[in-house]
Every structure is written in structure tokens, then in C-alpha cells.
Length: 478
Image 1 (spheres, rainbow, N blue to C red):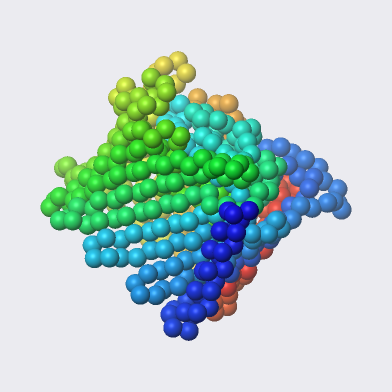
Image 2 (image 1 turned 120 degrees about the vertical axis):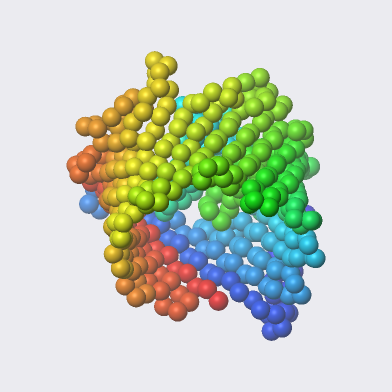
């Protein structure tokens, strides 16, 4: 009861502050209302064909976000409130400001739930994936994977990588979180984040403190708080090389989300664990130019992770960029090495632009199942950019063993994008084929219309068997 009272008093105090100072200080913000409708018969997970009746039940998700920012005496005080059918789903207060050479940000997050999501890596490509490290008050494993598993589904639902339409992904996350009883408890202080940046003699010292309540929504009399601290030092040489070092105590790379984990309910500044000890060290070297080639390095170390294979050096990434001026050809290569400092995956990108036409070819080199290196052209992107419109063909190929399990006729997927703007109206279309121009999968349509400070959006997602989702958005900025 006391925690609920504190939350309500904080909200009331903030609203009173806005009312008292609105006439004397600038207030800005926005109101966003999102409605997503989907047939109850449809399975929103791709590749699961279903048959719906002409007249069928629907599921509806309505949410409203109210954002307010008050600027007074060099401080920005912000409030973000998320409303759903269950009432207030989350409340975030943020204070930012500058004092001399120091900038700071302080966040207070009130929510019925908290999820700690850790970054992990795909065992083949070493690409970033996600896993659930902790969740409260419900259990999200399943449907998602516990750490250290590499969960592509969780990653695709949170990040817009083209597998799910954002409206569909938001609906799926809402269903999963609600079914796991993550949204039933009253609001309480679930998280606090403090960021401090200090510039001294050309160096930037950054400190991020993460405080997480691992019993959020559990209804216990004594909360369990855990703390993580990230220390970073960054500077630039006279030749333009940027050097950065990060040390993580009681925290690991990842993200934390609350509520139903919608985009405004996420923080990508790291995740907290229950053990306050040195967990990770990261070194970044950017813009190192050698013989006209731009080099960027990322080196990761892990400590005290519980598994010997996850201790010490775990990952190295070497990115190089080069512009071949006579041909106007850009080369971008990313080599990923494992903890034994052995190359495991390489992505080579060739880009060429002439007038309104641009072409990008992406090659993958990787270790095959028999232990030998294999290379394939994985993706071929062609873009035509006339005035007022953009047409893109994204062809994902699968000739070699990397995609052999789902490869049909050498083409894994073909996406055709059309984006157009006419005055205050913008339209985006995406047609997805599981073949060169056959095996139609989905059509995405997004149309937006802006009138002064008001934006209206409509979303339509359909497959061959059924309409997957309809979405409507109303945004007012003031």
C-alpha cells in the first residue's frame, strides 16, 4: 500500500508542478493513441497457415502514450505515461540537466513488471541475439529462451529486422506478457537509472548506475534491489582516432524493459545481475585510417560468468571501409572472431550508386558443417530513387549451406519496397515473397497523413490466408 501511495503521490506532485509552472515555462509533449485489431483465428507467428471464417472474432489492443516535457531553470523534467485496457501500465519520470562540464540524466520507472534481457551471440554467425536473464513477477521462458540460449524470435520481436511488422510484434509481445501475468500487479518503483557525463581535458568520463527491483510485482514485503555500474572513458587523438573503454560491474550488455516491453518501455543501457562484480570489459577503436582504409575494432572480455568458455576474451569484430573513387564503389567488410581469436564469420558489402540507381551486394563467408570455409552471395539489393518515391528490391539468396534448410530454388526471400510522398501524405508498401516472385507471404501497407501537428496513420498487414492485423494511430504534438 505504501508503495502504491508513493507512486500516486509522485504522479500527483508532477502534475501539480506542470500546472503551476505551465504559464511561466515552456511545456511540450505528445499524445499517441494506437489501436491494433487482429482476427482471433489467425496465428500471428509467420509460416503457420490458418483458415478463418468470413465472420470471425477479433482481438483488439488499445494503448495511449502521454509524453510531457517541462523546461525550467536549465532542467528538463519529462513524464511518460502508458495507458491500456488495464489502466496505467507504466509511468516514467526523467530529469536531465547540465552543470558546467557535467550533464546528467535521472530516470524513475514505475511498472508492474521488469524483464532483464541479455545480449548473446549466434553460435554460427556470432550475430547479436537475445535471451531472458530474469523476469518478474511472471515467467517468460517459455515462450522465450533462458540465458545463455540465442533466441532469434525474441530478437526479431524487439528489433525491427523485417520478420514482423512493428504493429504485429507489439501485439505478440502484449499477448505473451499478459498471459504470463506480467501486467496484473499494481505499479511500483521497478527501476532507477542515473547517467553522468563529465568532459575533462578532451576526455569524456561516463558513469551509468542501474538499480533494478528483482521482486517487482511479486507482492513481497521487502523488495530485492540489485545494482550495476558501467564506467566508460572516451577520447579522440589529434588524427581523429576515437578510443573508448567500458568496464561493467554487476551488469552485462543487454536491455531492460518493463510493462509489455513496447518501444517506449525499453532501456538499452545494459542489464543488472544479482552479483555485483566485474562482468565485462569492452574496448573500441574507431576511425583508424591506414592506407586510405577506415578501420573500426570492437573487443569484448567477460569475467565471472559461471562458464569457463565465457571467461576472458569472447569476441572481436574488425570492420573496414574503403571507397574506390574511380568506380564510385564502396567496400565494407566486417570480420567476426571468436574467443580463441579465430575467424568465424565475415560479411563483405559492395555498394555502387549512379544517379537515381544504387546496387548493394552482400557476401557471407563462414565455416560450413564439414569445417571448411564457404562463401556465398547472400543478399542483392537494388534501389531506384526518383523524385518523390523510392523503389527497392531486396533479394535474399540461399545457394550454399548457410540457408540450406529453408532454401527453395536458390531464393530464400524477395522483398519489394515502395515508398512515396505526396505533400502531407506518405505511403510505404512491402511485398514479401518466399521465392523470386512466387510463394507470396505477406503485404505490409503503412499510410500516414499529417495536418499541422496532428498525424494520422493506418496499417494493413495481410497474408494469403487471412488479414493478420489492422492498425490505426493518432499522434498530436504540442
